[in-house]
Length: 155
Image (cartoon, rainbow, N blue to C red):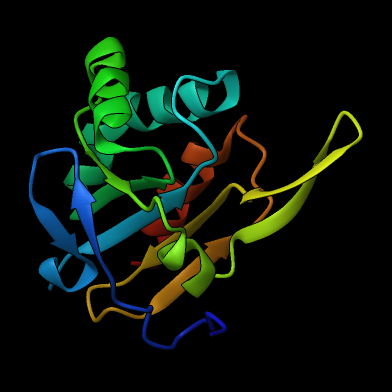
């Protein structure tokens, strides 16, 4: 499946850090910031999560919900949330089906090794469930502010 701007975002259902199963369609009338990241407790992912944490109230003020998705199990998400005081849900995509649906499950290369993993990406989904903006191959520095400004100026 190819995610396209101004078209319906692929719905999904995943286990969430609050112990419930969460669907994208659970948030009608809200803007959703759906961000995919490679792994809990790693430097870049921690920085990104803490940036979202630090701007959480600003997103809420714009009627936006933040959902983080990685292949980590729920137990690891819970430790990540506790360690960094994250106020938003993290979703477990252990079989990477949702990452595949959003085309962020990619061949990666690191120190000469090739492996499959998540390409850091963010999708902003509008109140009607359509993809309003996509950020692929995200560089962490300044990214959260860019996403916040997009919502502020366009939604």
